[in-house]
Length: 449
Ligand SMILES: Nc1ncnc2c1ncn2[C@@H]1O[C@H](COP(=O)(O)OP(=O)(O)OP(=O)(O)O)[C@@H](O)[C@H]1O
Ligand SMILES: [Mg+2]
Image 1 (cartoon, rainbow, N blue to C red):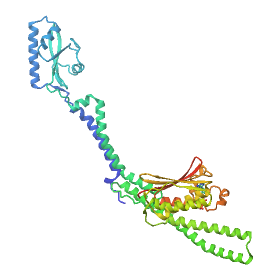
Image 2 (cartoon, rainbow, N blue to C red):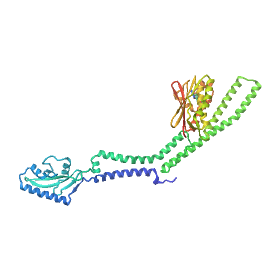
Image 3 (spheres, rainbow, N blue to C red):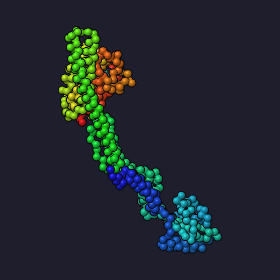
Image 4 (spheres, rainbow, N blue to C red):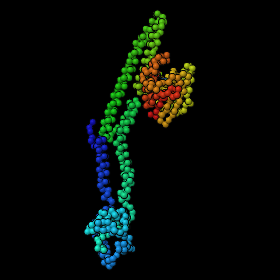
C-alpha cells in the first residue's frame, strides 16, 4: 500500500502539536502587546499640558517661595481630579505615600528631559517635571482619572493570571478533546472489532478506516490475521469432523463383529466391556461431530418468543429430573422475544440442564434475568461444588473434573465445550461459579443481534 504522507497519523499528530506550540508561543509574545497599559512617549498635546503645568508651577513658587511641600501640593491639586506626587531627584517620594501603580510608574520613568505617560485601566500617569523648590530639585508626577472606566477584557485577564489560565483551559479543552477523539476514532473501531474477534465472532464486519494511513494498514493486518485464524479454525474443525466421520466406519464394523461373536460364543464379561467401551466411543464421536457442526454452523438467527422456546425444554428437563428423583424448578416465563440460532441455543441450554440434573444431589433451579441488552439463564444445582481453580478448565473439550468420580456418570467431557461454542456463535457468554452450596452455570444471550 502506498504511503500517503499528508494523510498519515504522523503528519496529523505532528501538525497539531506544532500548531499548538506555535500558537502558545505567539500568544505569549503578543498578548502583552494587546495590553494598552504601556509606557509611551508623550504626545504633542501632553507636552503642551506639561509645559503649562511647569510654567504655572514655577510662577506659583516664585510668588510664594516659602511654601511647604504640603501646601504646594494642596495648591496644585486643589479643585481638580488630579493627584500629584513629589519625589527627589533620585525618585524617593517626598510627600505622602503613593499607590502601588504610581510607585511602579515613578520607578519606570525618572528622566525629566524625557517624560513618559502610562495609561492604566482607571488612571493615566504622567511625569516627571523637574522644578527647583527651596533650592532643591523636585520631580513632579501627575495622575488623572481616565474617561473610559470599563475594564478591557485583555487587561482584566492579564491582571488575573488564574482567570487567564482558566480561560485557556476552557477554550483549549474542547479543541484538544475533538482532535484526540478524531485521531483515536479508528483505533476505537479497531478495538471493538478485535474484542468481537476475541469473543469468537470471526465474521464481525470490518469497519472501513479511511482517514489515516497507519490505521488503514493496521486494519488490513488485523483483517489478514482474522482470515488466517478463520482458515486455521476451519481446517481444524474440518479435520475433527473428518476424523470423527472416518472413525465411524471401523466402529460400525467393530459393533457388527461384536454382535456376531456374541451370537456365536454367547455373552461374556469381556464382550460386555467391549460393547460398553464401543458405545462410549460412538457417543464421543457423535459429540465431536456436533462440536464441529456448531462451529461451521451457517444458519440465520431467528426471533422467537422466549416462553415458547424454553417451555418444552424445561418440561423435558422436569420429566428427566423426576425420573432421577430430583426436583427441577423454573420461574414463570415472560413473553419477551429472543434472537437466536434455535438449534444451537437449544443444544447449549440442554447440555447445561443435563449436567445439572446429572451432578445435582436433589435440586435444580433455573433463574432468568432479562436486561436491556441481554437475557441470562442461570441454572443452579446442589451437589459437589467445582473447585475455583477448575471453573474455567471445565469448558475445555474432553475435560472432566475427576475421572474416577465421574466414571459412573458417563459422558465424554464435551457437553460444556458444545455449549460454549454455541454461546460464542451467538456473541454471548457462558461461565460457571459456585454460589453458596450450589454450582451455578450462566448462559448470557445478547437480545438483539
Ligand atoms: N452442574 C455441574 N455440577 C458439578 N460439576 C459439573 C457441572 N457441570 C459440569 N461439571 C463438571 O465439568 C465437567 C465437564 O462437563 P461436560 O458437560 O463438558 O462433560 P460431561 O458432562 O462430563 O460429559 P458430556 O457432557 O460430554 O456427556 C464434568 O465432567 C463435571 O466434572
Ligand atoms: Mg455434560
